[in-house]
Length: 35
Image (cartoon, rainbow, N blue to C red; front, side, top):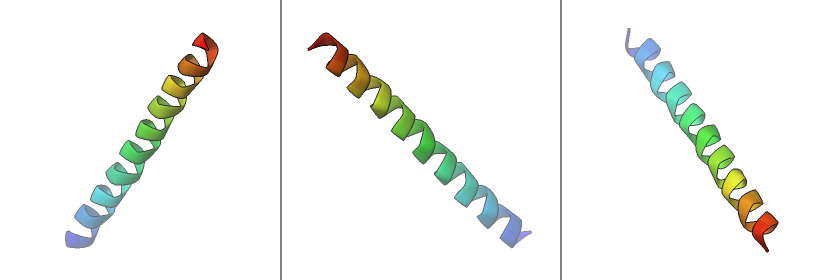
């Protein structure tokens, strides 16, 4: 059970990281489009 919980935490961490990167890229794109 402990291993599964660990995997879940790692997975959610990677997922949030990807989401954050996506959001930042969108913001950057908007900024570039404005200028």
